[in-house]
Length: 198
Image (cartoon, rainbow, N blue to C red; front, side, top):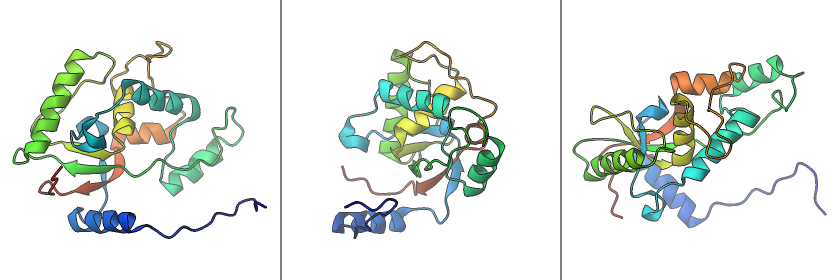
């Protein structure tokens, strides 16, 4: 028998504990609000498989339809209060997006520079990707939430949906999305000198 609202607490596996330990060793002390325009996918991520154009566009489409799911509890409460009577669930409580895990890019890091160069080449050949707008002056690579960050860049660049041809234009009533585009997304940032032996 299932009890509504009950969730079983699962003990973390040894792999999860090791991952947490490594993040704690290599992370910068505090989370950082990172502008998605400064993020390129890390070529070592997802077993070197890269990202999917369709998945980035799907995430951006969901943001357009359902609104942005902020992790900021105060922003969530304010948004719910303002939109409690509006259609399409704009006032509903929604679980926030995952916290992105990024690596600070560095010209001294071969994988950072490789990721930046590779992403510049890929996006110059595929118009449905958001173009790279960073250079070696300062950037991040995404180990987690790469599709999410590039979905935000579809809004920044007003790209057209591969599904509907509608332009990704931020809804001005979606304060969490507008805030994410204006001030960035709170992220865990790993140090540029992190060892990535894969």
